[in-house]
Image (tube, rainbow, N blue to C red; front, side, top):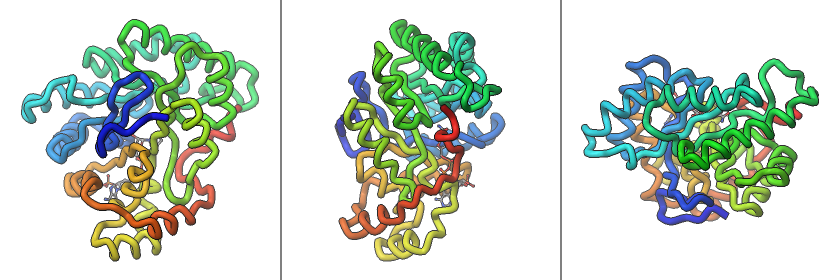
Length: 290
Ligand code: NAP
């Protein structure tokens, strides 16, 4: 199992520390929005940033970091950058796709590179080429990992079946599985696969894309703890050792979402939140892909 080294980071199977809190960047558009969000995040203590080829903001993120790190007395080594191989680049195009991410970010190396999605864009979900493309993409990531260009490699949106397929055939085990995770989607089966193989389970859409902050139970627990609903949702995950990636373009909310390490939810609150589990997804559904 990925172990905890401090309240604010986890140690991946590669031995590298990954911050428990990262800024999600999906829908951060354009150089200015990315710049101001990164500025607010660095000021609030974020040291990890989650991008992807399909977000079309890798170049803006890389540029913003190069400009802003000195302002905070930080260097490249102080931040942890994640990006992802786009579904259109699966299989034979994986090398080109990953090298494109590296050149867009232009930060020397990528700390964590994920296969974004199990299926190949443009192929039907039951297309027999999908498993071969996944294997070829993974072998490419392994090659770039051996060269040090991708410090850690992992997957996203994989189901338990995809994880088992990968684990049976890979040379390097995935360091991270990034999937949707919040009280309405507790992902019990995937979490136990990750625990069994030492894969760090990482959450996305912890706020249900913003919709969960108005859930009545989340609001009640927030009020009782004198916290905000977003902080309760994020704390529920990190208290279970699950790293989170809240997205915001608003400096006040970026700051609010970082205040996770100075309070604890009691067992009753944790259990009541987990009891909301109903399999609800706010994002895409990977079980529709073989
Ligand atoms: P999210 O973090 O669950 O929610 C983001 C939404 O909540 C935004 O609309 C944001 O609006 C709002 N928000 C943020 N902080 C808030 C607060 N304190 N109070 C109220 N509203 C708040 O959704 P997400 O963007 O889907 O997920 C987060 C990150 O995970 C993404 O940005 C991306 O990096 C990653 N992700 C990965 C995948 C994948 O396939 N691997 C899929 C989805 C997401 P404002 O911006 O206006 O604050």
